[in-house]
Length: 255
Ligand code: NAI
Image (tube, rainbow, N blue to C red; front, side, top):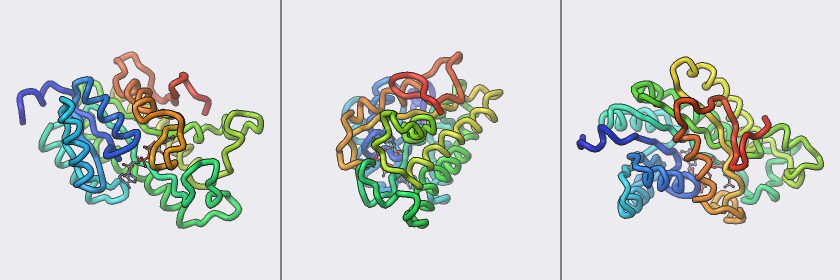
């Protein structure tokens, strides 16, 4: 372990080989953190880590499939062996589950005709995967002087926003998979925050906005870097920062 790594904050970002997670990894590295890039595909993870290093950051890749317990445990073991602790966990990995890429066009998620296997797969990654990774990393987070957990949710998670027939999200098709999985993730965020508040671990959910990534065939209007900024803000909260919150770039979001 290098001299520097004992002083730098260490952040793990799941699904960080591309998209918003990659943007978050780049920005945390630019702030001086050591970034651990979680990726299912070791080659893609290594490529992303090499790119962050080429830009002057400190980055390492770890093989991590949030639905595969063995890789989650092994990733925790590697972070422990290399850094001895974790300061920031970004639960970013997520899937839409839809054969359609744009949320306006996700007809295969409409509740009355949705395929249950798709719903299971989406919840497995977007919800159970977050529990698995968080619980594996918690012993390492507890060794940090200022641990922060950020769960990447979505505006589509907001029951207030999505139930408003005249609101800005009225055009989104009803979804029995992606949107409720993100609502569950936001709810889970509150429960973790409640348990960990006494330990000084701040846990918040964020909605990055509609970001152009592979998940929506690049139909979003924000760049990955723009979507990453709110995630980074919650990852770098001071001791008096909020916990159990749900935030977008525009501020607190309704549940
Ligand atoms: P993306 O498809 O570009 O990136 C998703 C990342 O998650 C990829 O690196 C992928 O390999 C990884 N991933 C998927 N399943 C995984 C698994 N089982 N284990 C480990 N990694 C896995 O999509 P994007 O848009 O960057 O999504 C990142 C997060 O942001 C997701 O949680 C998504 O739901 C959320 N989000 C995205 C929005 C957008 O407009 N793009 C809007 C709101 C939320």
